Image (tube, rainbow, N blue to C red; front, top):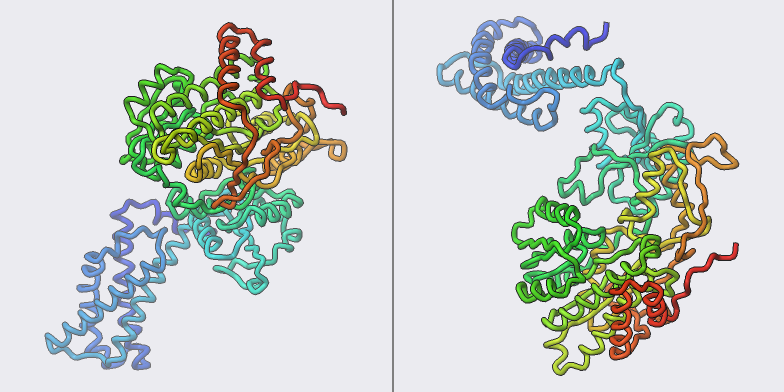
Length: 634
């Protein structure tokens, strides 16, 4: 009969009943320890000295010991969570008990046992009372993880501190059976952690049939190393889960056993470069900051990053009511009590509203993230795309110059470089507008003191942003496929949303006026490889000619109108280094302000009258490098 069937009645008792059982056990152990201390010291179980001095020690050990244990909280701790700290407490209590017994013997002039018996008594009391609690803990855990309970058989990759903590947490939860640790350190091979062997990663081929999952327990692992490890295990068709990041663990946002599947975000892009805190906080702390498109992918993350540096006021300008509500609630949940959050429901194109807003709040810094960015949608609705992307920028630049806002930063896109679509062309015109205002500002007397510093930050795709391929592929995988990719050779740059937002803020601090900043996007990613990786991370296989029985098929649909095979970050300028290793400055061609304002007047008239062909013609004149979409020759 299994052990847990014999004693499971104990754990079904009420708290008072279990406390009575524990007290009874302690009474027995106190008597046993006193008797053993005399036996071991005198080499006889019932030595005459025991009959003279041992009897009163037996009686007082119970009369003093049980109240002492109760008063110092020995019966308040939960048995299933007993650990080394509880053992140290027991040692202290038992030392105090022995000291009390010795004092009673001296006070009442009772016959005292040999001095060494007192040391033996303390040691035996600590071993006996401690051992019974550890035994009860292990029995309880064995019941929670009994063979009748379905357990996942796992190996833990990483035999360091995080791996040991994860093993302890999983043992306590009782849902996993840890088969082995894997570690690259050959000095650890053949050793063990709490009886669990540490093996070389290569042994996975020998034990893969006996495990269900691999748990990656190296929170500080770089993306390059993580990609290598994941690729190794994917060849064995084994699912990999990971513990939270160092930041999540140290901040308390996650526990060591908060396991999650390795996400594509964990693998794409480069290792995180620590931000320059002086650049992040520069002109943000105690300033009034406005973020347009505050509910969008980039805008919302900008707000999250900005509140960390305590702006005096943060204005959230957003035209979508649900998105505005969501970002306001998110910021409130972060506990940013020092920051005055002002949600503004409106459009960045509304010049009357903007004038009142800037007059009322004396805004210091503006991050313009509001834009229509979905290439096919803007291609189908060019007038709306031009109206929003071009004229919101024009309106904001006008009010920034009028109210002497210190800094204005346009969030631009790599699609503005030699654009092949309406969206990219509108973003390039937005850049031209910012450049023109910077030129005019540079002509103002006392430029350093009075004018706005206009700047542009250009970067590529951000992971998991609205409309990006990662959420689309996740949805397609969840529905059983197929995954749709427009072209087998299409490539894109990727960056995480938090990193992009931090780099935008840091770039704003570097602005001198008229700057066009380029963010280092790392290595470009082949979208087909991205799709394959996401399928494998989901524990599925790719269905193709070599594997007709696979789970998810990848099909190629052809490039969409206005879509490029690859994106660029430069037009014809050479980038210059800045104080930040991932931020570069470019000086590109611009249009004289007077010529640009005249063309924009004509463009505005075409947009207001919904003359799309005329508007597109003016757009192409403003952006001569824009090549109207043509199907590529296959």
